[in-house]
Amino acid sequence: MTSPQLSVERLVHTYPDPNGGRVIALNGLTFDLARGETLGIVGASGAGKSTLVRLLLGLEKPQSGSVLIDGADLYQGASSQRRQGRMKLQAVFQDPRSSLNPHLSLKSIVEEPLLSRLKLSRKERSERIDRALAAVGLDPAIRSRKPHALSGGERQRVAIARALITEPEILILDEPVSALDGPIRSQILALLAEIRADLDLTVVLVSHDVRSTRALADRVIVLYAGSCVESGPAEEILTSPIHPYTQALLEAVPQPEIGWTIPKTIVDTEPEKHGCACRSWCPMATPECLTAPELQWVNGEHRIACWEVGTLES
Ligand code: SF4
Image 1 (cartoon, rainbow, N blue to C red):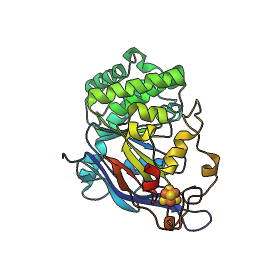
Image 2: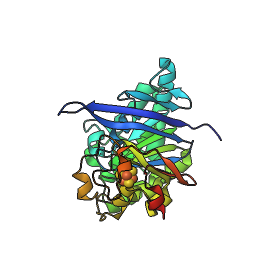
Image 3: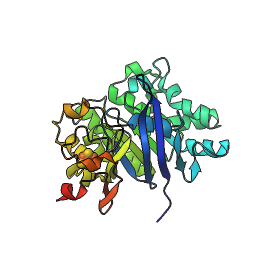
Image 4: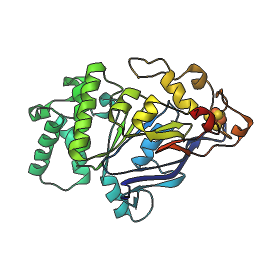
């Protein structure tokens, strides 16, 4: 087996709780990602998705655990090694209106990561800008425009061009189509799939939108209260979920804007701090669930964290 390009190992991160103590954002999350593979991370608000993105991008340091890119630890070791790892990462965020500086031209917006990361001549930068804009289906002639002169879909194309300009190997997609309307959403998803294949990118797609996850992901991790409750091949999990939380997500009434709605009983119930986090709302809970379940294999690459795995499968 080839070594993974991205390894996340036992990542733990907490925030202060306004009521005292700490809120667990990530609780030992672990996964590997091979070069060229796309992993979907799904879950409701508060599941730990945003914290994971911040940790992967080095915007925060985890309390414990590690993120390795081609074996180089993003948080430990020599600064040159950490910098080299970070150079391989870029991100596209949800809302291009807030992620693009409205006062800058498209040329300056797309060029900015080059200026901060690579030493290139003006001519080389200009050529890269044209290539990046063309790669996302935009006419390089619009480089002097400002973001307000573009449609939502075009703005997201600029955000993707900006992410691609340093030629990253790993792309973090944080709800990349959630702010877009139906037809534009499909176009951007198709563009992302094309770019991923052309550039052999490794992708982490963070989303609560089942349709975009199904369109892009090879594998899926379902997060609840900072822990993986189910993981495996995307198609299998998104069509035949086993864990009660994944089932609740997928059985929920689909909403045009977000793809699914989390049942109110789950949204309104605080995850349990001890034992299985789901036990306050889970209809299958037994006294055994006072102890937190470990992830266990169901079949092939499919794993779930639930004591009732035998009952759920049958
Ligand atoms: S471990 Fe228990 S509470 Fe948790 S999902 Fe399984 S049955 Fe429900």
